[in-house]
Amino acid sequence: MQRRDDRRPHRHRHPHRDRHADSGRREPTPTSTPTPTPTCGPSSGAEAAAQPIADLPLPAGLEDAKWDAARADTSGYEACAPLSWVTVSLDLATGSSPVAILLFHDGRYLGTATKEQYGFVPDISRTDPSTIAVAYRYAKPDESTADASGRADATFRWDDAAGRVVMTGQVPPAG
Image (tube, rainbow, N blue to C red):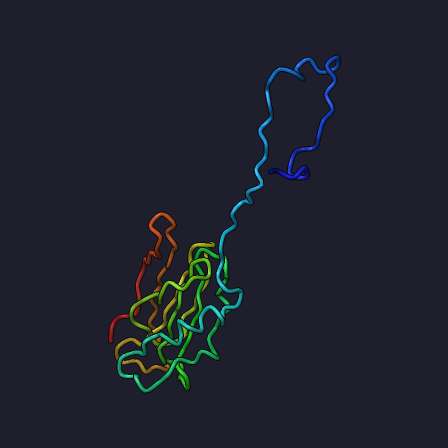
């Protein structure tokens, strides 16, 4: 049974004023079903990233290290964004230590941007709600980490039709 306040306001009809009052046409009755709203993840980037960071494998050769969840950069996280990110580095990291980029869709953890975690803190920026640009730094052959001048640029885009992130561009060379 529908409550009166769910219906459109009652309109008095007078046969002599409204010729169509008894025409048999009825206006559609609005339903009381609420409109669905999108579901977003946790409002806090720290909360959204806590379990993924705890479960994140350590880079090869650094199995005795641990990810520093307390210092994770959550400034790129948005609970309802098509694509957002959190970065985390190792506890007691140096400037060239590996950094993981955790990707999220509507606040749901998708995985890391790349299988390998690259050294140096990347420069990440949002180019639109579904796309982020990542500029990686790396040391070229015969360069020290202090003089690292290599740069690789990649773009990560949430593809709604495919239901996944699509990467274009380059990452630092292996090794």
